[in-house]
Image (cartoon, rainbow, N blue to C red; front, top):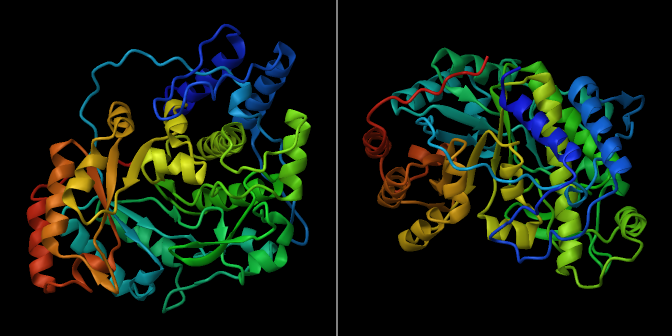
Length: 448
């Protein structure tokens, strides 16, 4: 199969076959973090066998009463040889991302068929080409889910105003207008303390060294699923595969919450796993470089596994991520997405750059990791279109879009309702401005 999935498979198998390698150089990570040593050849053979199983016969299982079977844990990335970077070659023009996130704040629109039809028509007229609807928020799904039902977690919004499937309706109407729909797992490993997920599965959540389990996010107080726990990995994988199987979605997207704040990881399960693999206890300092690297690599290993599961189910699905800029993502969230890029598991990258100051915005556009991503995959930036209590003027949006376009980058706006509603200007003025931003159509080919 001549596809990115096949290419990724060959890269991973090459890791195992090639015992002579050089460490991958990450310009944003101090040298020495990757020099941990390499597992012995028998272990690498075992890794290859696990990879083959995941590629050829991945079948996540749920057993009765909402209990999840364990899945084989992939090794840390540090146990595998790094991929040497191929020489940069000229790439053909890439499809420009012109997207918008549809959040829980947009449910008044999403639940109503006529409003969805109008919204999709407006986006098409404004020459948008991609919609990212939320499907995982606050520990709840936004569609009829057998996986959530077996876990005794009720859907947040099950049906639309006339009893219809909200996600299915959006996909159908968007495809009629030529837009892609990439469902968005907004909350990643995050869930509020009062959610059924927390109440039903308390052992799935991790903690800080002092025993506390919450942090403050833009969504308020949240707890964090343990990304290293096999049952957590299985649950998330099952939800993702359910969406990819149940709907004609064009891909799947994860954002900055598919991560773990660096303070976390001191739960019993993770402490035991770290001691088993390293023969020592985790350091008291949560920012210890080796301890951070171990946890980041575990998350990377899961993302590799998740990518393989998605591609096995739908080989040409777009595996999209929307993180913070790399230096912040790694240091504060253990989200090593630059390695994900270099492992060839990303089909699309949208870096969130929510900055009102144009100079700061442009400085972040110019980061080396964004330029590197542009060489291989469609790359864009997340632009704040406004919040209910903090509307953004169209001039700020216009300047940021122009700066992104000048650098060959696409854009995605957070979020739909603030494009031309809840704005300082009138709907007519806003829509005219967006029409000027994208005067010509830019279709993205559906990957059947």
